[in-house]
Image (cartoon, rainbow, N blue to C red):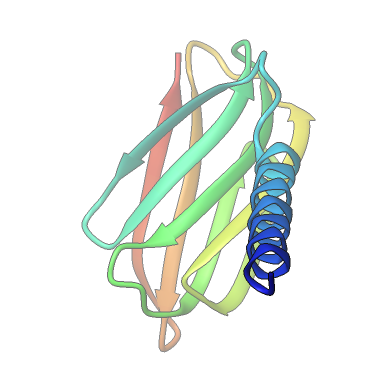
Length: 123
C-alpha cells in the first residue's frame, strides 16, 4: 500500500519538472514570426533573432571554449557589453536600417585585448 503514494509523488514531481521546463522554453523562445541566423568564428558563436531585413530582436554571443570573457554585441548604433560570462543574450528590439545587408556582430575581449569580432549577415 505504501508504493502507490510514492509512485504518485514521483509522477507529480516529474510532471511539475516537465511543466517548468516547457514554460522556460516558451519564455526564452523567439516569437514564431522571427527568423534566427547564426554563425561561428574561431572563438565565438553569434546568433540573432530578427524580423524582416531591419528589425533585430536579440543577439546571443557564446564562447566556443566555455571560458568567460567580456562579450560584446553591436549592430548599427546599438552597443552592449557584459563582463566575465561565457554566454549572454543581448536584447536589442529595435529597427536598424542598412543597405544592402545588415551586419549583426558579437565580440570577445580577454585581458583587455580584442580576441575576436564575428558577424552574422542578415539578407
